[in-house]
Length: 259
Image (cartoon, rainbow, N blue to C red; front, side, top):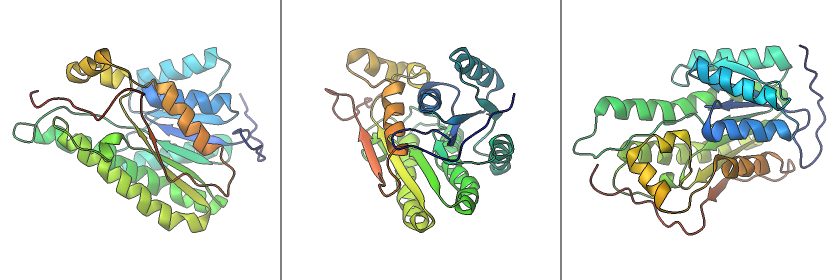
């Protein structure tokens, strides 16, 4: 099937744009891919797991959306470059990336698994840096674009129970602001989205976090995706550097001292 992507774009839509979403097969990433496609973009769904990719693209196809699914490991820079290459080969361009891929870990600094911590940092922080590095030359060459980094309120606050995850998200916040200052002269907008508690398969999969989800309000993946879409649809002279999105009635995150 041949997909024609128009170069023009109306304010308030993503018509003619091509958006790559990492960690796009489920949760916040899938919601972002879906909302961007509804707004008119051609979407590329990137994920580490082939089965989840197939399920995600089939779900989008059921809604009349043709999405390109690419297997990608953000810890592997070559893997990301290959995904970017496939995107441009398929659609002829790349306009925006939503760097959403990430994992979590609930532990304590006195007893956490160092191997797991390394995986969290390499996926969340190094993987995000890899993604920015891989797409930036392409965006510079095309005259600009958007990079949206999925951080967290955990990148602005600290609490007991997720030390490596918190460190990774604080790192993403710093990376985002540094990249924004460097890339704005190239017409590239870099935005940080920092959600509070979100009900996703990732958070539901943790008994510790699931108790929080069951005890009070939370965001849906679609809530976060709408924030991402709002950022991407801003006129080009408007840059949203940082956006915190919280569920009403939910205060600071408190996982508890015992895991």
